[in-house]
Amino acid sequence: MEHVNIKIFAVDSSNVRFADAIPVFHRWIQSRDLPELLIDVADYSHVPAGPGVVLVGLEANYALDNAHNRPGLLYVRKATDGAPASESLRRSYDSALAASRRLEAEPEFQGKLKFNPDELEITLNDRLLYPNTEEGWKSVEPALTAFLDGLYGAGVYDLQRSTDPRERLSVLVGRTSRSARGLQAPSAPHQA
Image 1 (cartoon, rainbow, N blue to C red):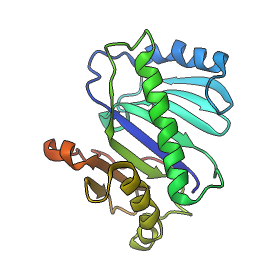
Image 2: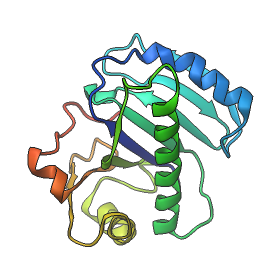
Image 3: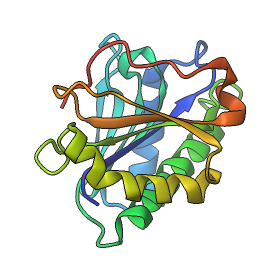
Image 4: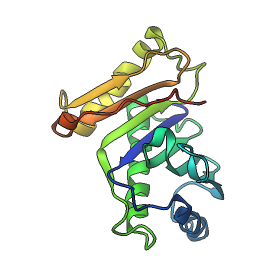
């Protein structure tokens, strides 16, 4: 599956300064601990409800993202990894989860930033391959269901999909035991 974005939402980020991710991401480039080739850091922390701070890589980007005023760790895979679709989704999720745990442990964010792996957004960032139509949804639903069933268990998560064809194909997902407080739908259309 190509162009997969996975965002793991932060729990409470009121004490977080997005710009603090800049030196962290520069250290990640220098340490070469992540599997992707990392190239640069882009600071968009000044943009309200925007992309935050982006760690740009060749195969994938990572970001401390604040799109729609919903802070989280965003993993953006740029190309296919050659795996079957549900496995490809799992690999992207695992990369996002590992980066979120690593970011939580960084000195700049210890005790200030916590991510909830039970609440995420999956976006397929290619309108040609994955149009946000009923037909587009039917083409990816089996892979998404297999991935989510494997991650959380069958029937123990809520899934909300925007049907606005102007938006990218995306779903908000929350584990049922956590979703009693409700998932918030994005307040603005996704940007491509």
